[in-house]
Image (cartoon, rainbow, N blue to C red):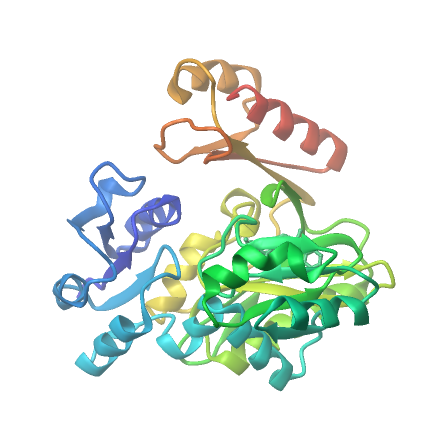
Length: 373
Ligand code: ADP
């Protein structure tokens, strides 16, 4: 019998699950927020993912529920589980991707290395933390942040006064301002049965809080670093019982420590390289994991893959017009677009290039992506 996988959310991550679902013989259906979303090709329903009856009606027609994003409320998720639905990842795991304070507390229990942190309720508490941490800190809204929104570097408690007002007594998360050499990401897939498959750790480059580039595997890494990153990924995946893809965002500090920044429980931008650069792409792997099928190989197909995000898109004209010239000039580049209208800073696509020479690969990937701007 064909397994029906229902994806909540119609963004580009749902869109990129469609092709591998077809290849795996899965029947993929999407509950999209609106008409005309990235994943509209598979959208069998349009509605509000916060509304239990909408989600329940969608879940009734599928065998497994998974996600394009982490925003489905806990009450809705728990009601689905109580109905007997297969939800992957489940609400117990997803809570750690929904609330950064809950995540920090759990990672502390698991003994995973992370920045110093604390919940803070007012400017005075924040000021005390700053005074104890070299005069600087990073304040985060525990819920609803993405792409650097909800993250602010502060040097005094007063600089977060507006956020404390908006939080109305709820705690914010404060973290030490980590002096990092670079950012890394560890991807790992986990099946309901507990089987796991880890990808090689990658380097991610953020600009203005948004992922701009990924180099896979991370260059200049010692064997120890690769092992530590994988062990952290395994400990978290097991410790929180995630099912599907888990991305662990990491800092590599100037003094060679690895600290966990945050978690994503779905395919993640830092794993897009694997679509063309690994034996099994992360979208296929996510589907295998949530459908409880054997996981695929995670080895790189080529020594290097570089992923460049297309941010914003062309200021005039459409992405589609840029396709043919880009393909003509760089036949080795793999171009992925999300069917989204260009808008400054918006993720509208990405380019993957693989090969033997990192400088060449990075150059071709960057030039190809720039042809879409
Ligand atoms: P988002 O959920 O918006 O992606 P993150 O918590 O990942 O937010 O933070 C976004 C970026 O801010 C990170 O990629 C990193 O560059 C920077 N950042 C976050 N936390 C810290 C920290 N404790 N110290 C230094 N930089 C940080």
